[in-house]
Image (cartoon, rainbow, N blue to C red; front, side, top):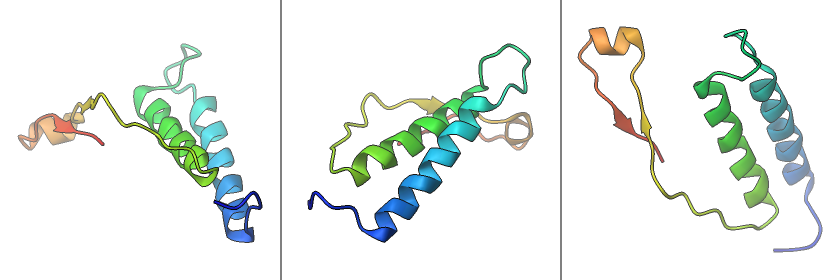
Length: 82
């Protein structure tokens, strides 16, 4: 990878940075800790941020995503995430 970021890379970094800040800034539960969905979304954005800089990210161990209440009502069970 080149030491110079392209304009496309810079745009992606800006978008990732905004998404990370938004996800970690959420306090819907009123606990000061963002909900699990927002935290995991922030992590995915962080991974993309690192990959733009040419870093390799190991995605292990895998984790399970619990279904929402409406998914449970539809009979959807846990699903493996990347």
